[in-house]
Image (cartoon, rainbow, N blue to C red; front, side, top):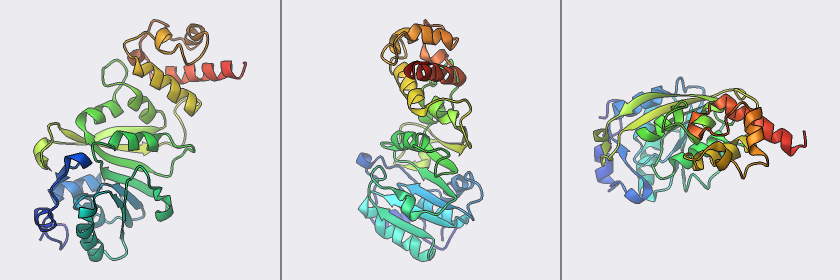
Length: 284
């Protein structure tokens, strides 16, 4: 018995289905079901929510979500080897788990989910950041999700929650903190996983706000932030030269020294600059 349900321990599941983790899929399995249940609890009360999970693998977090009372879980899994193990979980929780085989970057999950929706996942390392940016930059805000509870490499988690002035502060921090609250809620050592990665991991909980902290056009803000941090060693008057004509004048309008560098600039100042760029483009 596993302790959280009547299914076998994950080590037995992995051995029976020959589910050795594949580096090419960014897989590192978390086998301690007490830990997976603890991660599920970080997402709050799930009893009235549909949950989207990406990369469930042998289903440790999936079982945690279901045992913690998730109304329904939609799991998207790219590795066909994991499907039989996930089917066993679905049979143990009738009507509460749907599994879709495929690439999460290519699948629109909304047809399979009913609001309110929360996303909880031990994201594969090789797609985690790209998925996060997609979820933070939808065409319409508020987004389809209420919250994201995601495991990343600790370094990525620190980048999401970083404040201005340090090396970790960058595009991810600005995008995450502009329209949501982000905080690290758990840290996990390498030995918690099989195989053990070379880095520590952390769980970040992100809650969507109803609107942005400061007004700005999303596309313009994203362009400014990407240009600024892609050349973070350069002064902003150089790194943002391609964003708008007379960029130095616009920086001064936003009360940003043209000689400043991206990591020195806070969220509110980036939004002020985005509004100045928008006004210039509109001829204002």
